[in-house]
Amino acid sequence: MLAVTGASLTEEMYGPMPELDPDRLFPPDARTREIARELFATIANRPILSPHGHCDPAWFSENAAFSDPAHLFVVPDHYIFRMLVSQGVALADLGVPRADGAPVEQDPRTIWRRFAEHYHLFRGTPTRLWIDHALAEVFGVAAPLGADTADEIYDQVAARLSEPEYRPRALFDRFGIEFLATTDSALDDLSHHDRIREAGLGGRVVPTYRPDAAVDPEHGAFGENVAQLGEITDCDTGSWDGYLEAHRRRRAYFRERGATATDHGHPTARTENLDPDVAERLFRTCLANDASAEEADAFRGQMLTEMARMSVEDGMTMQMHVGSHRNHSDEIRRLHGRDMGFDIPVRTEFVHALRPMLDAVGLEPGLKMIVFTLDETTFSRELAPLAGVYPSLILGPPWWFFDSPEGIMRFRQMTGETAGIYNTAGFNDDTRAFCSIPARHDVSRRVDCAWLASLVADGRIRMDEAYEMAGELTTDLVKKAYGI
Image (tube, rainbow, N blue to C red; front, side):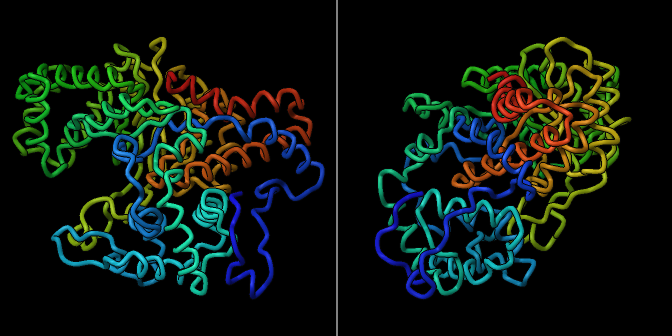
């Protein structure tokens, strides 16, 4: 923990504040807790591998100082502002930009005060764990965040952000990040990644191929995006064969810049394996903007299978993030645009949905397809049994709403008995909040050690196996799943 100079307001009122509980998230009974402590000590300081997330590559290419605490913690973080919105705070009052350019709160201190005044809303949530960890471990804050300490903590964090040691590249090295993947549109020129490579960070920052904007017929600019894809790859994307070739070339462009994976955010897990002539007719219908909702879903499903085939060819790991009803509020989408926290989990089916793709390529040697879901009910019923038999299928860690101590523990308990740990992808933080990365990995490592400790305590595995499994869950499975 960083040293704090001078007594804080809270220290003057109540005395020194305790540091983070060193046994947080470990089991309450003494024997199992001691086992968890021993396991955690062996993996706590392993390097961080972040193979899927949404950090901005510009942070590392430009290495500019983060502007202020509000724009570091509050404005970009859906976990934070959706909770405040649920209690009546408007997005505009938190500085979240309007799609129509209308004015929003610009004063970062005012935004921070509103956040601090409502910080009690996060009691018991993983967001509270992450922010407490970041404030204490990254910025040396000893006082609990609240209305009375908002200005004091704002000033302390702002002062740190002005120091060279708090620039993005310095924090990257300090956090012990060995590998970090961003998520990038298929149409991105990746110029930031080119500059990152020239800068020579201590770890690797690589792109991830996300083709959704040129794959989803219900994306508002699908036709324009497909045309742009053709222009930048010198392919005729008015034809089915040319369209597929454009994706192949673009994937190669990403691979040249270090990409090891693709990512696909689809509303359902539907896959198709259509005859080429049927697929071409469907593509032309979508390109003409004449596709029904059913046809658009079928096309997305066909493209998942096509992307899996391309992964067989080029070796890129394929990630599927499915099961979110995105932009649930039309009003918020109209005022603030897409992806502003109003995304809700929906019931998702996998057994029948994935079968066309698995029939096509599911037994291909070397293919790796990582599946994420927001429907926890499918873990033990569908996904663990599927991953427990298909060599290409890997279970992604708890995602989004379930990236929590309870969600991680449920995942291990529901999938471990059928798929074990060796058909899972370890952990990834999936965050756009840079300073939360160490906290998220800390939570995952602690919960994994708590789970392993319970297996040792009831005699299901030996202690030497638990030590080995802890290391595999922390780094080894991630490297294997993502080809790092």
